[in-house]
Length: 277
Image (cartoon, rainbow, N blue to C red; front, side, top):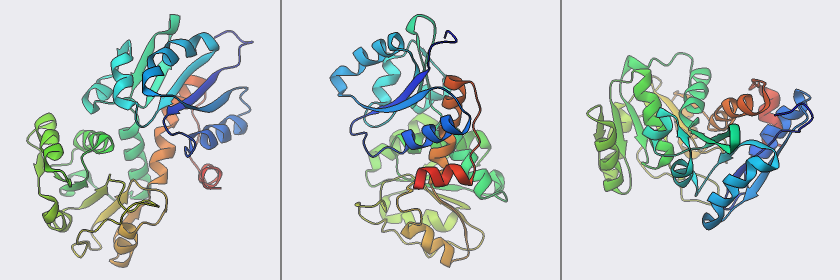
């Protein structure tokens, strides 16, 4: 990138108008006085490859990828990190020399940074983790938990076959339980993670038994609208340590911003306020 060229980045998805990423990156660009721009881009599936090959020619240094393009972006990349390959999806692309597309997945990093700061007393080796859901976010979370040394990950999903696929992909440290028994794994776990959209504004509530949560449990919900979901409210009432989902959104953005704009950003209260308001 020449000194006179203003770096551009953005987020690609469909739909995309709801994304908080432009607020987040815009806040950091302003905070650090960087002459760059980050924009939302709604791109149809049929146009994704053309757009990704064109962006570097327009001055883009990289972009985030969100639903429904995370899996397809992986197949279009020229270079893929090991963690993105294992997760099976990309959320962060960097454009290298001659427009080479380098794909990574920072969701697991964002999840762990948020968890460690929100629950500094959590010990990965203390006991099993219960993960509700079996989509792309669950894959990133499971990958991060196994790397952190969690002895066993208990998986429950409304569609059992998707959970079984995770067991096949990640191995013997995963145990699959039917959705009707989800309350049992919550009671057994020292960490509970909701990776589904249940509890999100406009979605049905997460209706699984939560009475197994106690003061020794750490509970985190990837949903951040609302910040205090029914799951987190119930966990608070039980005296558990709770971690909301906004921090994951903020932390997963850190590696991309640093790669694109040359500055590692801070995740602080001002950052949270910029995204929330």
